[in-house]
Length: 240
Image 1 (cartoon, rainbow, N blue to C red):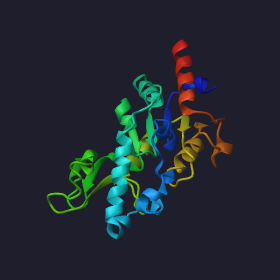
Image 2: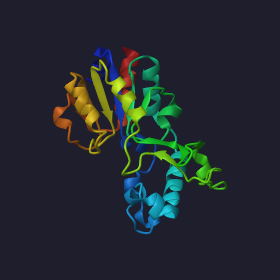
Image 3: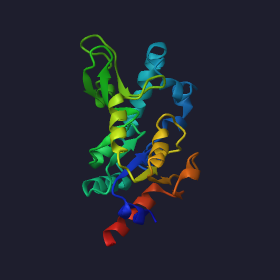
Image 4: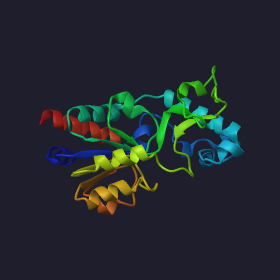
């Protein structure tokens, strides 16, 4: 049925969550071994307050996240989405993920609601850096201006980036199919986008391992592997 919905739709948008990245082998930081962080909840280290109150652990935490991202690659699902965008089957991607796998796979229109772990910025002068400089042997976290260099991600306690919200709003214009891939749809305000797409008359498809709070509003719910769903749909599209 997903294939038929894709073929019928004139404007399809993808909404990707953590499940998209974990299928690349990436470890979700919410379930990371807390012993690595001196028995602290990793979510506390992804908070804006940690920059001042626990900077050394904050840096160590993001060194781990950046290295974890770099240890893995885009999976088949990422590459399928890139192909679909190049063919005009999807309009773009709204993502909760901060990894740069969608970009690596070749997607161009990506609204990164929670920021970008692939880049860093100085908190004083806003100079941009590649995230690799956080890692050994460089391990740089201070700018020439004296400011602290931090990951370009949205920390708990911060607002979502306006440019990403604007792009997401643009993608929702004239939408008729909205596909959720690997999101629990429990994080606000990102989880409002599927609701708004549905309110605008779009069909809603949710592909996730576990049930979500929005399943009852969906036109189609699929609780199996993302890779399997995308691969099967892609093969059917190729053979149609």
